[in-house]
Length: 473
Figure (cartoon, rainbow, N blue to C red):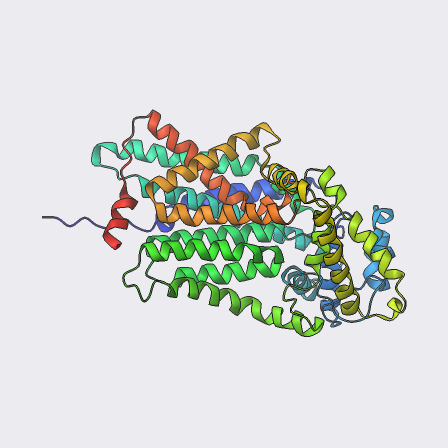
């Protein structure tokens, strides 16, 4: 009797495929950036880019994690660029002391670039080229995920090898094609925003969870997923609202594959501990500065007011700045407010925003179901034909994966559910908060389309993962 030799690692056996995908994605992303006329310009005027860049400047000069709106050296590149008249940030006032209104990862990353390349056109271009790298890595990971899933579903016999190879090639072409054709995501290469890094982080989390699902009694992959999740939260604080759903999904998988009743709970604990190892120092810092239990800082409450407002209700649940601007003007009228520190003003803004948000909800509670539905429509809405195709295919891909590997299906569904519930109860911004999921959705769409093509080819798809699951339970 001959012993069946284990297949080599999917990653190692397809390294040339991944290298080709990385090359193509880098070329497409680089071309998109080079076509942008302001590659060496400072952050764009509309959005959070100047906020992150202002803090990064302060960090690079040794001033700490604070804004530098009125610093002439910070203002200089913005005043010199063609769009200088559009920068309303140049009229903001600095409030003394550190801020808690932005997460730290992106400002820290930009500040490290400024320590290597003096702040100016070359450094601004370097920030954008790093975003190209992040998008390329995320896209390459999506190719790996799709190929990993497809190869897990197929058990080729000698007479089926060519057909299976064709299916794998189709999966590669389809997934790469979707990633290349998605123009929406490449618009975030032009600014200093967290989207490319959130995309890379979420894709890495999905990859680590998929690897853990294959060997659920080993904790190193779940620890890796926790570290990646903590890093993503330092880029974008809103991911904290994913944490309960993600932990629940991990707990369900761990419980379903438990070897003893006493140890199944250790896996979600490892995940949560890894997350806390990354975020706890920043959370402690914020609570210490504010004197409150505000681990995420002050931004959340003020932003939430923009999601629960008349403007949001009239615009499909999308966030608007009008409510926050109005609150800032009210704070200007408070006696002694001109003497406040940055933290004092941020806490006052958060308190006022909390009161106004609850007041608005109490007056519009009958509109909440409509508001929640509109947010989901804005978030997932396939407003273009190509988005209709690959988003629908992604749902089909999730069904395929759940059918052949329930463990992975639960984990992927927990990511999609956590994302959707976060948007439902907070706010949307024209689909911007779906961007971190795009690479995972590319992979799911590749599986969905390729799985259907495999059926049309009458290819037998064996339940390899189900047999493996039965062997480990």
